[in-house]
Length: 417
Image 1 (spheres, rainbow, N blue to C red):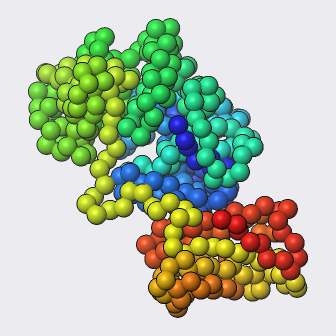
Image 2: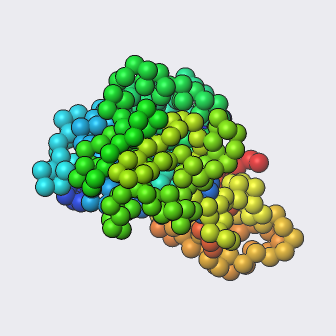
Image 3: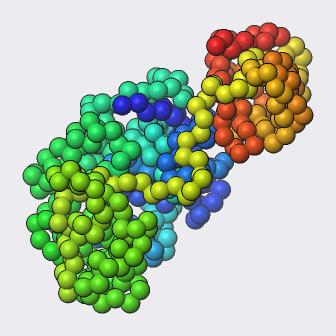
């Protein structure tokens, strides 16, 4: 099972905007990748581009669903929600984390605002977040390399620790490889058998229905978070009982009635097939590890996977990161058109690991090379860097990486193919 390695830092507080920083919870944390351009090359199965900026991108932990600390101005049982969040932060190495009293989801202070770490990801979700297994500390591999993920490696992730400790529910999407899904299902079942974490308080599951009279009562319950996230807008719509919940789910097959694959039955279904509601009673009739959730479908015509890097018609073949004399304004990148026809570079751009962008223009003739002088917006690092060629739609067409030992004053680096 192949995942992409991204190195970077986990961020829980912005020193310059302490009251406007990230809101870490039990399954989401902000991540600042060392090479933002690598994120652009990831699959987008729901058609949503990555929601990334200079402060990073939110990472949604693969395969787990934590009780909500905040959702549409409400929350789930806070003891369980905060326990998962606090353990996630501890596992990443953060210490003495304190939250604002009037902004209880934002970090007021901590011994560290950010810490080094890495993620193993296979794509972007429908909200523009990275879906990933999360790890503290640096990985020995090169940024952007492919890593084979198996059960033992998953067990060492923050995701695996949270699931094994019974602090989160499982939530398996179709993008999770089958072998990992089977392994993590066993991990979750073991925690449930041990009755640890949230499991002794779990309600609205195959062991019994939950009684919900209003939102205030719902907030005190421990239940599968996706079911909670469906009930909140249902109650907000004015419903006072669950006799109409089935019809309400079916009315929106994209945003409410998630498509599922029911593993015990070996058949397709929807969320309404595993939820039973009547009167004030609501219940999940199948354990969450027994069905697979389909990602939100991409709108018609929306690309879900950028073209594979380094397989386009236009390639980065050379770079001069350390010219003789001043670097700024003298660094160059050489492109090669492998096709027989000219390619119009209007709208194309080169970017580096820091997120700089050098717009391109004009034609490059068929079979010809073009040496582009960088203007300072993109500055090639002498200690190594990543260069990405992006087309007018923002899709990464080619990417190269070089290390410090390849950099010599005045010498051009050739990227052998």
